[in-house]
Length: 334
Image (cartoon, helix red, strand yellow):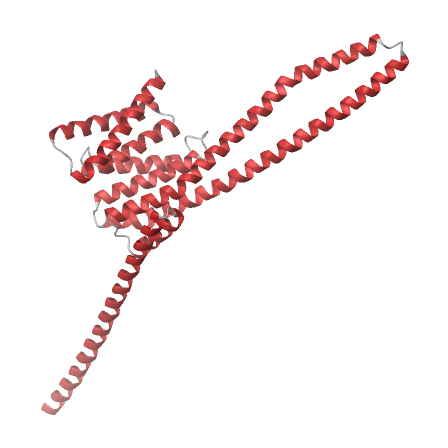
């Protein structure tokens, strides 16, 4: 029996040794993968910083997106880099879209004003020609000459109108095409960042209980739904508007419990949220109430204790922006 036992012990020992080697192999693979990921992450962040310095924000957001897909656990600096990259990549496109809409409005105003200013004069001119024709009816020769002149004039007028209409049509088509192109770029960029937020960053920050990051990500998601809502300024109750409001409200509820009133992230949230309610949702009373409440609470806290040096400047800047908005909005409403 001892021989049998010894045989079993030897087999068990070999099996344990093999299992240990397998575990060591897996650990080495995990360690190697971790080192590779860490190295790749550092390289991506380095490239993102270079892109930022070169003001290549489309490239910067690509590198930061890859960092998020690799590891959603971002620190404060990396979160700011994410926000900066997407905000700047979108900024010029938002400006372009707004300018194009303004040009289209001006174009329509020009067409309407031209048509209205000319219509009565054209009617008067035609009536005068008829009166002239009646008075010179007996003078057939002159009447024929007059009719020829009228025909030429009407033909030329028709050609001029056609040319103007064709020119206007080309310009309108150009503006529509450019506006649609920029609109698609804005929508693509917004949906890309919203996807990162919803599927990676918000999920991760919520799972580990990082309230500060969750407030930041929720606020940013609300911002980009607001940008989508701006593409349809006549519709204040769109699905994008509802989603923007949802994420802003979610961020504010958490910020009021987790962050101090003078915290730059909390103040930045209120700043953008109040702009959303004033400019997009057309609710000036709610915007002013929100901004005023946040401003007064932050000032009250600052009177009691000084903020950290690294946040003091940012806090002061946002408070100035809140004050400026309140002054503008109240004066406008009055």
